[in-house]
Image 1 (spheres, rainbow, N blue to C red):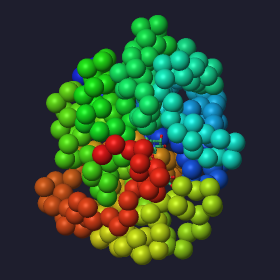
Image 2: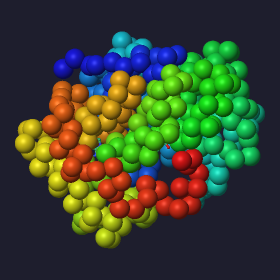
Image 3: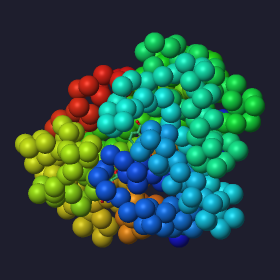
Image 4: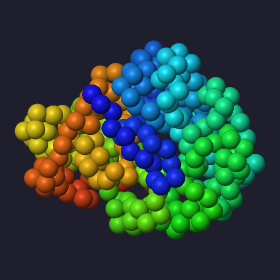
Length: 334
Ligand SMILES: NC(=O)c1ccc[n+]([C@@H]2O[C@H](COP(=O)([O-])OP(=O)(O)OC[C@H]3O[C@@H](n4cnc5c(N)ncnc54)[C@H](OP(=O)(O)O)[C@@H]3O)[C@@H](O)[C@H]2O)c1
């Protein structure tokens, strides 16, 4: 398989057309197997994936240390190609709770110092605050990252889950490579205002939740038991009647996938890839078999008839339930 590449915005790096999101290897989706996680990162690098996405708060540093170990133990040629995208700013507590966001310039530099150490690298390739800190103007947060760029500790500035107005203000402060935001067949909220704004400003999209956290992967079953600390146990889309409705959408998608001889996950990822060269899906594979399936999406071509069939199976707005519980929806700009 030849790895396709895409460029993140007009100022960002050239990267593989699929990135690997490493969150589930440390947090939020129940137990993960450390050895298999590292093997998955290695397999991704071997297949030509060059973008690894993490957050310093994924397992309170666990995910960065895991990536650090995976990079240290990867062949030098693969390690040198890898780019690491880090989110910071989420405040946690020892019980695993979430207590807000900190985008003050001094905090940005503090977060970065710890991330560099945990990752074992001398620079972070893309650095972004996970959510807007409502008490700190975005210009100050982005300005602090721009200072880290000047000093060589960060290469590119990213954004995460912010709306068009914040994107414009950030881009007026310093060059922004990409916006990381949820985008999938069942989370199409960016299409009205956010995507036109990033396109106008030459900012790329790193799309997360392209499988809606496994919900539209074709592997999620209604009887799946989720641990209390699994995000999905509290996510509106995974509850009761909402879950049944959403899995019906998946069955409609499965018919299309079967006709094309591919899997549901591959159709869902290929659909995001088909939305534009400016979009790079981050897939949350944490096992090698899932990674192999996800990479197969790069070879799936969707023609007009396929896209029309997918649109009929899963029309915009078809999902039941919000993508986050209400208290977390309050932190995402729409
Ligand atoms: N900026 C933000 O606010 C934000 C928020 C969330 C995530 N992210 C980033 O985006 C990345 C991706 O998000 P996500 O993990 O929620 O995305 P996702 O790819 O929609 O969901 C990943 C889950 O889907 C399941 N899955 C089933 N088949 C799969 C396949 N073939 N390939 C991959 N996964 C498959 C896996 O569950 P099983 O392992 O149980 O099978 C996996 O845990 C994260 O790792 C993180 O780096 C960013």
